[in-house]
Image 1 (cartoon, rainbow over the protein chains, first blue to last red):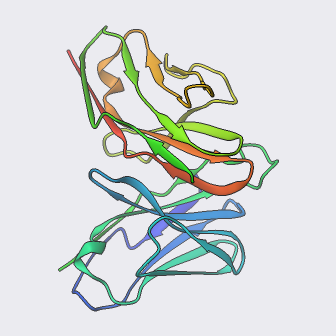
Image 2 (cartoon, one colour):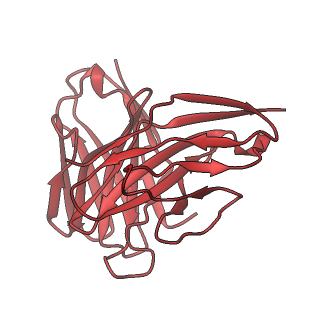
Image 3 (spheres, rainbow over the protein chains, first blue to last red):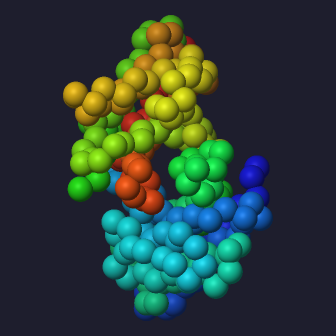
Amino acid sequence: DAGITQSPRHKVTETGTPVTLRCHQTENHRYMYWYRQDPGHGLRLIHYSYGVKDTDKGEVSDGYSVSRSKTEDFLLTLESATSSQTSVYFCAISNDRGAAGANVLTFGAGSRLTVL
Amino acid sequence: AQRVTQPEKLLSVFKGAPVELKCNYSYSGSPELFWYVQYSRQRLQLLLRHISRESIKGFTADLNKGETSFHLKKPFAQEEDSAMYYCALSGLSTDKLIFGTGTRLQVFP
């Protein structure tokens, strides 16, 4: 698969604890995205990044923060996890506008988070 | 607002039957439409995009701006087509790619 890895792949935590998910890419792509996948809701955009230190909110950003200090890493943090944040989280990357394959997302394998 | 609607949660057909997965969108600018597929135990992957105007695995989709639709079609379904299908929308004036709620396609032998 393309050079995009997510960690951890599985995590169980308790309500109120902080959680950080990491997305790492080796493709040098400009854009990085965090989605959550839930039955009946499909994929919903949480946050995305269009460059180092450049991020913006998606559809369901409340309760989540992100950071991108270098091109290859995009971190998603749940400051105080809640049961409603139990989900499968997907990271995705895409190339720059005007580049080959622009706007086409390559996805990570997903991180399954359970908040008890 | 940028929105994608997939009205069917589940579509069940028999092998050899035609398939049409519906997708409607709402976007004020010039849209870019995609279909992504997630096979069991595999990563989400691009199936096709409207600007390519190509057929992938026998699937085609035509962008109809008048009806704001991008339905996915295949004349003869195969069992290996069973998967979750997502329609997605982006555009020239946005960096976001918004997905629909998905349609699960089940193809029975």
